[in-house]
Length: 255
Image 1 (cartoon, rainbow, N blue to C red):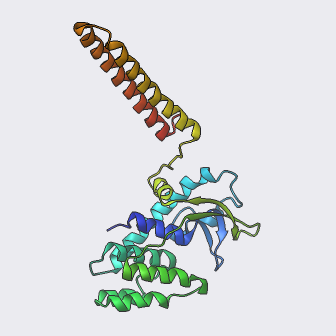
Image 2: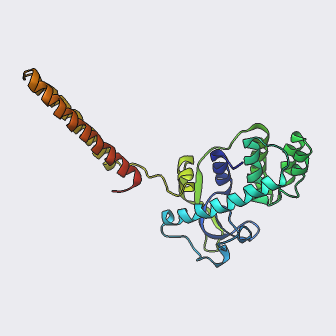
Image 3: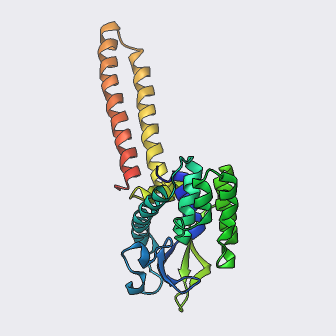
C-alpha cells in the first residue's frame, strides 16, 4: 500500500513548504516539506541559506526530496503495522510518522495491532509536543477514524534573517492538482490568455474554412461535389491534426 493522492496532499498541507533551509520549532535544520537529515540527503544544515530568488526553480528539488522521504515513511508504517488497513488509515499513519518518527513505539500502533481501532484513534492525541501540533493530531485522528481529509491550499513560505519560517511571507499557494503534478516530476502549467487566444483562433479558422467549403460545394455538379468533399475532408483532418499538436505543445510548455 502507498499513500494516496489525497494523503500526499494532506501531508503537504500539514507541513507547508519552505524552499530554503530553516530551523524548526525545536531548532532542527529542515528543508522543503519537513525534510531533515535523519531522513537522508540532502542535509539542510549544509545547504545555502536564505530565500531563493526564483521559487519555481527550487520547487522541483523540494518535491524530489519529498518523494524519497515519503517512500521511506511508507516502508516504516508497513513494517510496524501487522493488520490490514484501509487507505485513509494508512494515509493518517504515514502523516503521523512523517511528523513524529514514532510509529514503531507509539501506543496507537500497539492498539491497532491488537485490533482496537477506537483506542488507536484516541492514541493519536498522546503525541502533542510541541503544543501547537494539536490541530494536526486532531486532523490525523479524524482521517484515521472517519476518512475525512483536510482541505485548503499548500502555502509556500519564506524564511527570516534568523533562518526561521516566516509565516507572514507566503510566496505561493499550491492547489492539489499542482502538488500532484510536482510529485509526478513536472509542474502543471497554467494556460495564459495569449495561449487561449491562439488555440481559440485555430479552432475558429478550421470552422470558418469548413463553412466556406460547404457553401461553394452547393454550386457544383455531382462529380465535382464528390471530388471537393474528399479534398475538404483531407483539409479538415489536417487542420484538426494541427490543432491537436498546438494543444499538445501548449500543455507540454513547448512554446
